[in-house]
Length: 459
Image (cartoon, rainbow, N blue to C red; front, side):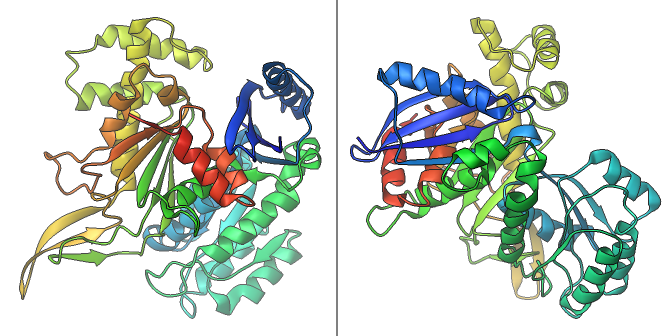
């Protein structure tokens, strides 16, 4: 046996996946509570003991790779000039790097904005703004403001190239660590996210791992830790695109429903499929991730309850019973449903989280009249034609009826201008292996793809 150990140091659980390279199959999986506040390797050793007990022997591994979202993951604040444009471009770059954008600020920073940044204690600041050759004044002003911050936080500059040297000098003289890369939006509505994504990833490796107490974990594995969402995005892209040796599934959407956030991933360009539709707004990335921080089924359960009351026919569920469940999960974030009624309550929360998260992720269109006839204008991705929706996340995986949750991603005829998938097949990540396969794909892409195709359950 040639075994590879794949580790996901999560915020709550440390999850292990052991792959047999020769058989191209999952040899074992296990999880234990993450122990980042003491020694992160304690939780890992607890999970490893479970794996070795399942396989009946001490294990040696050909490779050990790991991802992490422990200690809050990679927390970022994006600062731009125009909220609708450069901040959106910055968010795209950050999310592709596996970061969680905890705040976005635009135009000229105020003293209260600096206080807000200091109170949130982000891991990275991403300063953007202006097309190349565009606005310079606000960028220079914001650099001067950020140089006054009373916290030590790395700052990545990815704005107008004409002021990169001035901005870097201002921040450096203020005692800040600054990284300069290409503009995330060099021309109006043109996205250039990859250089910023790479720098953010490099800062994660250089600065954040040590700051979050992950050094022991990083020293244990063969290659530096990566943010878990970045590994999941790699897995989704591999599953869609395939390799020269193994065919992928084609354009798809991945829905990850968590306790703190609901994350959406889509692979595909999402161009209009109708000649009567014209694209508008900023271009969308081929591999897109969005994070909905208000749609976690534990931390945001009360918000979800209020939305259910406002948007849904509540006849099939007792609101008082659901409200009682919501109060329980708010006080015990790790609680799992035990009774049929509790499973139904959790399913109701997950359904509305999926419904809203997909609605926000996909594109939309509006009818318009033009001199040459009636048309539609489209913003964002048209995902009506994608072939698959993949479901993951604890509440979906452990649900008694995961298909009922994931069907909330489907196109709604009563709201036809929201471009949700129309006739997708549904797959379930039953073994919770997507982040592991993203890690494996760096060196064994075809093997990782075949394992996913073998283990994702068709609902």
